[in-house]
Image: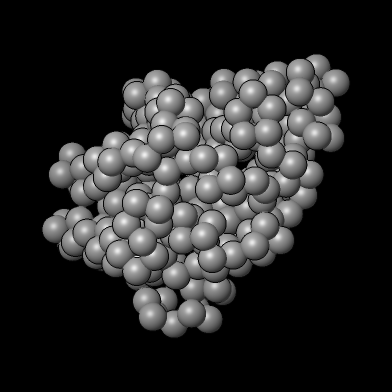
Length: 304
């Protein structure tokens, strides 16, 4: 795939998206058989209402770039464990006690349709479901039990207090005050970057790559995660709620953003610099695959 060809990237994302959606359908069907009947519709709504699916796509790209050659279905069955965690985080992030959001991906948020109590329970159910999903998928890739556990542990470490949940706590504590550059980086390194870094780390682990390759992929994912957040902040300040498909924006919630801190042009420069750092991490271990390079560029070039 040519790194600079937009149409090639669009085709790649569309083709990857077909595999991801099929794996999510399989995952949700399994989860619906395990949760109370009253919770199942909220699970399906939270997981299957679209999105960029960047995390499982990054997992699959990293797995292949690190030399993985497992069955196609098993690759995506493993990767969608990341999307289950991402879905739970959005469902809970949108709740009245958090952002009190009405729209997500252009649709009514899960709690607006199914109620707060059911949404809390549905989101919580996705956490163990994600771990189960990754263990099942990694086994399908032919990994031994200990290696499969390592992939699942990488996901849960990124999802917990040392990762995404810790970042969410920092986000709440930072409302209505202007954070420093260091504080903002720390917040988003956890809240947004941890799960994106985990996608790349998990891909390399699932491919049973050497430790230095795993670490390089982690650095790549961390930089891509920060660049993704910079791009989100730029879009928050330049696009409408209808264009973004979400409401309210971080600015309306009184949160610090890279644009508020640095201005639009400097934020753009920082996003591009992070992408170059991500590419350098790949190059350091000779793993500059076309898809991973193109995905890094996509994080700062997207329009929604």
